Length: 170
Image (cartoon, rainbow, N blue to C red):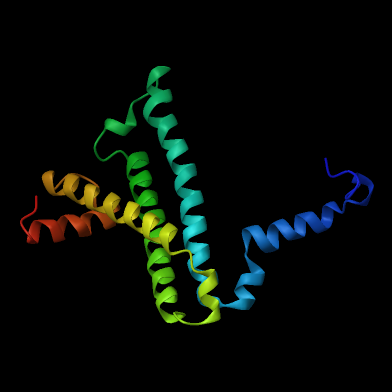
């Protein structure tokens, strides 16, 4: 399709790899532009990417492993693999929530300035809402089951469980 613009013989795989690492993985040009924009973008992007990969692995652990006769560790309270998933989900969710809060803070700070054109407020509000409600639902679940083994690994949900319990919203 783009053969008349870019020919394969002129492709530079080393430059493409460097661009992948510098711009997609490390976001270097954004880092040099603004440390706060880099941090919020990195937290949201890598939190989301890690959460997608975690959910893929969780689906395999919840559905495929037991379907093929393996142990259903997802339904074993306190199983180390399940606790590791709980910790990883809370870390990635917290990364995204902090990134969204930083993005909203940055949006507030650049109001009326030319940098405002880089604000993506609807997406940030949506992602922040999804992460916040996820922690609230996890908090409600943990508030119903006090003292279960390994709850400390769901530290975000545990914090919301304490908040909801103190407000009498369990």
